Length: 434
Ligand code: DOR
Image (cartoon, rainbow, N blue to C red; front, side, top):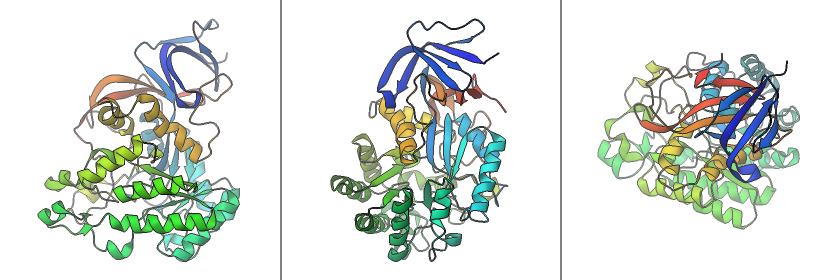
C-alpha cells in the first residue's frame, strides 16, 4: 500500500509558485500528487487537520558545520542531520573544516555515506578551495565539481591571496560552481575577540573592524568581474558589504550572499555579560551594522539566510571569552528567530522569509528537488510549522549534540511540527522520527 498523507486547509507558502493561501496538499509515496481545494484523497489516506498551520518547501541551509570526520565530540553527520530535520531543513551544505579537511573525493564520499545512512536530510558537502584550508594551493575543484560538489569554500578561513582567489573563480566558472568566501582580512583581525568599536573598548577586548570584511569583499567583487566566476559572500556582517553587493548586482556580476539569524538580530552590546555563546566569527557588530543587514535583506540585496550552525562541546565554550572557540548552533532556531524577530514585527513578509530560507539557497546550490515549487509531480520536501506556537530555546533537549545556542532561554514564536524528506516524515507532530 502506498503511503498517503493529506494536509487539509493548510496555508501553503511557496515562493517558487508565488502561492500564499489556503489549500489541500496530498502527498503520495515520495512526491506531491495534488494541490488544490477539496482534493479527493483515496481511502486509507492519513488526514492531517492543518488549520492554522503553514506548509513551506523544506528549508535549505547554505552553511552548516557537521564536524565529522574529526570532531565527533561536537557533532556528527547524524546528529547534525537530526538538528536540521528538527529545524525544518531538508537540505544543508556541510562546511569543509573537518579533520581531515573535506578537500578531496574520499572525504566527500565519507560525508555523503554518513548522511545517506542517517537519511534525515540531504547533506551536500562543500569542498575546500585550498588544500588543508591553508590558502596556498588549490584543491581539485574540477574533479569534485564533476562528482557533484556545488559550493567551494575555506570557511572559517578567508582566502587571502588574490591570485588563489582569481584561479578559484576561474575554475568555478568552468565548472559552473560557486566560490563562497569567508571575507576577513587577516592583517586587520589578528587576535580579535569581538567587533571593534565602543563596546570592545568598554569591555577591554581586542576588536576586528568591519572594514576587515569590506576590503576582501571589494577585492573579490573585482575578481568576480575579472573572471566571470560565481562569487558568494557568506555570513555577511558589515554594512559596507551590503553596499558593495548592491553595486556588484547593479553591474550585472554573478554575486550572491547570505546572512545569519544571529547577525540579523543580535549586536556587540549583547556581549556585556561575556557570554561565550555570543562569540561568533564574524563577530556580532554594532546596531548600525545589524540594521543595514536587515535593510539589505528586506530590499533584496542579500540573497539568503544561512545558519552557520557551529556546534561546540560544553567544555569548549565554558572558558574565558577570549579562549572559547567562536560559533553558535542555529539549525533548530533559525526559522523561529526569523519569524519572531523579522516577520512578526512586519519587517519581512512570510513568503519572502521562506524564499530567503529555502527557494533562493536551493537556487544558489542548483538543487532541483529543493526549495519548491510545491506542485503535483514534485518531490515532497516540505516543512509544516505552527506560526503561533511559542517555546523557549533550551526547554526541550536539542537534537544537535551541542547546546551552544546564542538564543538560549529566548522565548520564540513558530514551531516546526512536521518535516518531510521525499514524502517520509523526519519529524512528525513535533517529535523526531529516528
Ligand atoms: O562562528 C563560527 N564558527 N564561524 C565560522 O566561520 C566557523 C565556525 C566554526 O567552525 O566553529
